[in-house]
Length: 131
Image 1 (cartoon, rainbow, N blue to C red):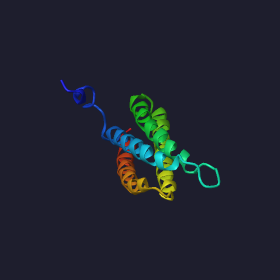
Image 2 (spheres, rainbow, N blue to C red):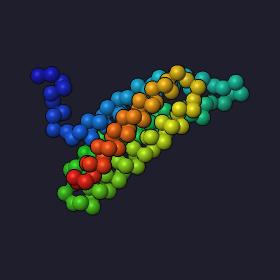
Image 3 (cartoon, rainbow, N blue to C red):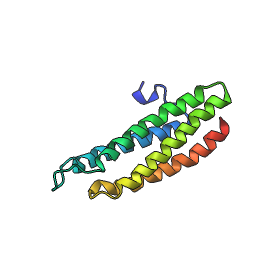
């Protein structure tokens, strides 16, 4: 059996999209962090360097929150985790907008990530209705 056939068939579409967003944000962050890691001429670090880590942290948190929401028995608990997913997606989108202000070639990939987040939000709307 291939590695992709283990356990991936039962996950929801929103979970799979969250994993795609995580992979994409990790690659973008890696690319951007190399450009932003250098000190500026005045000796200060680039203020946007921390947003690269934020997009990874927020995207890595999406999938576990989705699984928690889906595994709860009570509606209130499901909606608590679903609200957390919504907050994370909104923060992730906002940090992408912030990173688009940097002077790096990596910022060209951020519209792609924002497009995937928009797709995620559409899935999220439907997903929340089914919880």
